[in-house]
Image 1 (cartoon, one colour):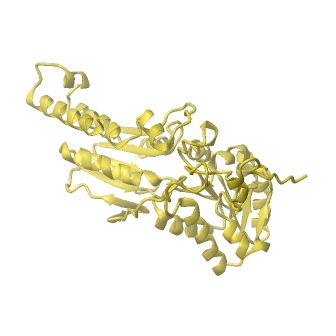
Image 2 (cartoon, helix red, strand yellow; image 1 turned 135 degrees about the horizontal axis):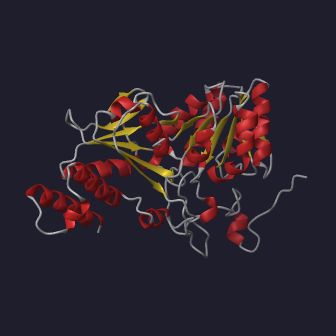
Image 3 (tube, one colour; image 1 turned 90 degrees about the horizontal axis):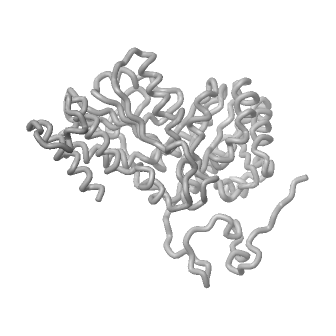
Length: 381
């Protein structure tokens, strides 16, 4: 039985909203129901528009939704190609199995779903899609901290859960251009599942690459042959990571910033690049437990690269309802917080215990390190 609910009852502006009856609404004027401010292009619309372009070029690409056609941005694709869209209802497990079947039939399914809702279909992703090497693309909307949607809707586990799936490839685009590019790269894979994850809300400005190492984009060069920190930026956190690098640079800490683009599998160039630095720092909008930082740490161990790694991400607990910025500040996932900790770590590598950064009787080097930490903390304030 496939039941369709009708939302918006009891509030006239919601009933008048033909898109989704205010099922997912931002800040509005209570009397008119109109948005208080326009947020511009968002991640979902960038994906939706690119799906239409891909559909125009490839007749074998179809779309799957689990009762979320408009929220995941597939409404435009459905309007243009109604015969190529499958709504499986609130049944993500069925959606994943259906995708596997469609892939075996010679088409390429794109299953767009909120990141947190894919959790319930893990067995099907593993045993029905990955085991049989099906070319299926999962597009995970609302990945990372969503904040105002509440604890259940934070997409903070996908990069941990999916790490264990053999053959699966996972992309975390940093901006709109990369959403378009990596979605196309994903649908070109026909012998394994691919995943493209992105955040909720407005897309920030483009973050251009200044170089390439292996398959990774270099976002900032260190400006020295003996750099201190390799900062691995995951997805939409690229602007924040560049801010971190700027704060570190003011303390005389040279930093390379890279975007892996595809975070699973870990790029082969990661270990050799890490070996050229004194410390590796990873920043991700995902649980620290089993996430990208953990995968990179394992890669370095397997390669025999003895470089310390510090991973920053979401702690293993449910997050309170708040704005994305408020949640990130509460868990310490901000540029000043991270820069302060990295500054302390580099000072420790220089043989300066963190406790002495706060004590008297310090050497000139220790005083300099303490001043660096204080400077970063003032930036946080």
